[in-house]
Amino acid sequence: MFNMVGFIDPAQVSANTRSLTDKSRIVASRLQKTDGEQIFMMPYNPGHHWVLLIVRAKKETAYFLDPLPGNRVVNKEAKNMVNGAIKIYNSHIGKQGRKAPIWKTLPGTPKQPSSVECGYYVMHFMRDIIMDPSLEFEKTFAKGKEQAPYPQAAIDEVRNEWAEFVCLHVD
Image (cartoon, rainbow, N blue to C red):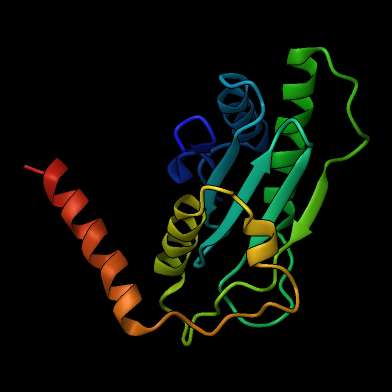
């Protein structure tokens, strides 16, 4: 999976961190360090809520996964950041590219039951995607395949994994 999946640090790109141009450059820099075949998972917080953006640079496609119920749309700043990054990436590799990248909302994700689990849900989405070596997340979370909320035990498992990881890196 190492060659198939990359991550972009949410602390570098989420809302209110730096200028839109700087964030696009950060994402583009990360995309340029690969052959473009990888998917890049980018947890993103537009303000008081976590979502997952997935970028496929070579296919000029971005995906939006949101754990909140309802017909949610990608935040304008996030969309502009990713579109700018793909444009910079295409320029770097000498590709003309599309006028604008394709955006796909994947509405079939499990939905959080209240307003406080979004971060754990996004971590669980990433975990589910990584655990599937076929990387068919687009089919897994497609419209019409709406999934039940994660059981509390699954959220607790993600919380425990996160806590164990943090404890290993904190003195």
